[in-house]
Structure formats: C-alpha cells, structure tokens
Length: 213
Image 1 (tube, helix red, strand yellow):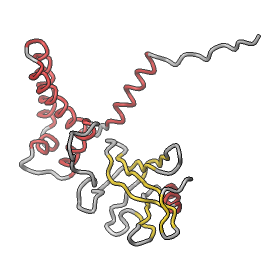
Image 2: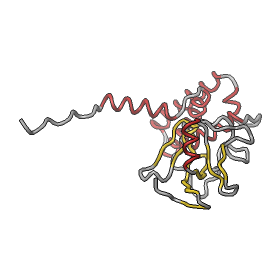
Image 3: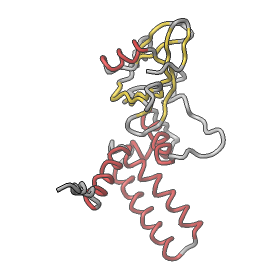
Image 4: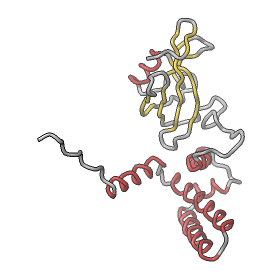
C-alpha cells in the first residue's frame, strides 16, 4: 500500500465512513495498518487517533460501536471506505453523521440526502414534525398520501405547467421516501432490483468466437 500520510512513525490512510443503506457519508478519519486489520477481523470500525497517537475503536467509550459490512480500497490501495450499518448516532455531537450542512448547493445524490433526513426523524421523533407523524402514525394514512401524490403528479402532467409538475413530483418523492424508510427498504435494494431488470433485458453479449480454426 502507498502511504498517504506518515506521522510519528505511523503510516496513515484516509477512511471514508459510508452508510451502507443510504450511501450517505457519515465521517472521515485515519487508519493505520493495524486499524484496518482489526476492522476486517472484528467487523467493527477501528481508526488511528492523530491527537492521542493511539489506535481506537469507534464506540469504545460511548458503547455505540460501528458495525462494518465491508471495507473497500481504492485503485492505489491508499484510501479506504468503511461501509457501515450504524445503530446509533455516529458524530460525537449526537447527530447521525458529521456532514450535516450543505455549504452551497443541494447534494448531488438528492434521494440519499432526503432519506437521511427522514431517518433522523425515525430515530428521533418530534411531536411537531409532520415526518414523525407519518413514520409513527397509522400506516394507512401514509399509504393514502403516496397514492394521492402520485395522482396529483399524473394530473399535473396532463393539465398543468412544468412548475406544478415539479412541485407535485417533489411531494411524491418525499412521501415515497418516508414510506420506504418506514418499511425498512433501502435505496441499495431498489438499485439492485433495477440492475437485475436491466441485466434481464440487456444480457451481456457472448464472447466473440476465436478467429483461429
């Protein structure tokens, strides 16, 4: 592995911690080889603290350990992704992740961002929150809203202008995201199903026959 940062005799590599379900980036830290090996061996996130100059396991003090589903390396083997299944807030501030604020523009992966916001209300309900009421109230109410918004998208497409179509489509995406979170269906599952359908309809071409007799 190529060393990205060497500090006090430690060879350190940046690690991006990503929610395996939503794709959301939760935090960034450093790991040395021992931290990477312990993460692979135990299935729990380990890092190297540059301030304490010591190996540490996420949650060793709070008890909120961070299960790691997979460790991915980039093509140069000098930076890594921990794909995780968080069971508690990841950031020390008590928020789901350390990247909570968009500095300028909306996030590129808007569906993952929307899902993350909905999941926050699932984990921390608030009585005054419309999202919380949809998540924790009668399922029939949420289902009716999804059907209602889908109908309004169709009506807007037939009889109204682009601005109204965008408005209604945004409402539909929001309510559908709430339903998916409530039912425990992650975006990865939807992506896998779409990929499967594409593979069925567009199978890979067979290998070309050899030119030699």
